[in-house]
Length: 527
Image 1 (cartoon, helix red, strand yellow):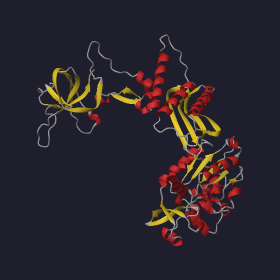
Image 2: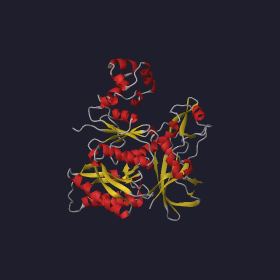
Image 3: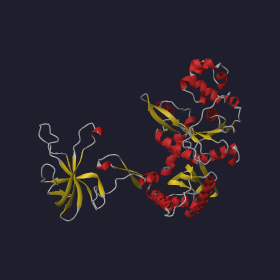
Image 4: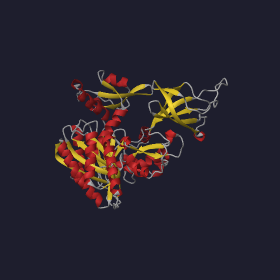
């Protein structure tokens, strides 16, 4: 079993780095200076306090938690910006997306850190030192201040990264590495750090030398667990942002690529590689993701779903061509992609079917393929099938569901059969919401109207069938609902409509005891 290795990435100036990059993109070049002190403030306890600052502000002696008034006293022309935690979180997530190129197991360490589980993958980049150097150098070129460290536990790596950049601790040496570090590097609560300092404990080694039960009794079990994890005596699992895909294939380019032809050819090659890997275990893909890593750190992900497990590369290639052609926001390569990855996050065992003499299995495969292509082009939520619902309320009798996941169930659904040589009982087109009509005269108590006005047009009823009385489901509603009487009518121009009277005569009364007249609606159109 491989020894677990965690890389902790810390961006101590993330808010001010974000502001600097934002100003540079907006063209405010005169405001972008590394030597100009910038602070980020937020209101806490009715006072503005510093929550982040750049290196220039730190050189003036300013620190996080200092009141804004004190900062202005030190530097009257300091650049003050409002805190934006949402924008900071979005930027941290974007950096985490980019870090997926090194390992699929990337976890957030809020507010300004990340954990990368690099167990078993550091050799792909020339070792742990080369991996960390490449990661930090790329972020440094993007104007981020970074600090990183690698250790056997996440807390140990985080503690090292908070104190000194570039430390790599071999397995088993975690305690030796963190013993000389100051207590603040643990990242514990400020009240605990102050309590330890008042007790004369200034470094982690001082606390580690005390009995465990003494520390727990004074500062709680949470701090004791944190200390044990920093010393390598215990470990806490990280929580990756995304589940680990079942299969991953990728291609890295020595020079960035930007043309559609190269991108399409690369996806085709990756599709064949992915299918070859899945075929070894007899599996097919149900959910696929293509990730495009740009040289400037931007990552674009395009997903495609399938109605059944896919084990043919040409199907995957066609699905992604449909997706690339259909996306509203074009796949902007910028200065080019230096890596393209194809992953199958959901796979299933492929069940081989033999076509019968009528080739029904082949027909089903063609229908499923058509649904997949339509879903890839216009979206899976727009390609629907209807499943029957056990109710007699017309607008609730069919439940629309995505076709990709419910096509087989819909084909086997027990729909009511139409009676031979009889007109259909339900209209071909059912309105999502019944449309009101104006009825001047209808015979009492259960006759259709002689005429009605719908969409500002007068319709004279020539033929009518009904009523079909439908009572509302009283067990589904706490208040009484009116009973409906449905009629199939044909007007003077041959149009056949499905209308209903919403309520019986004298079914409901108003506050004065007078009967409430029922209303009439059109609910659908027959062919």
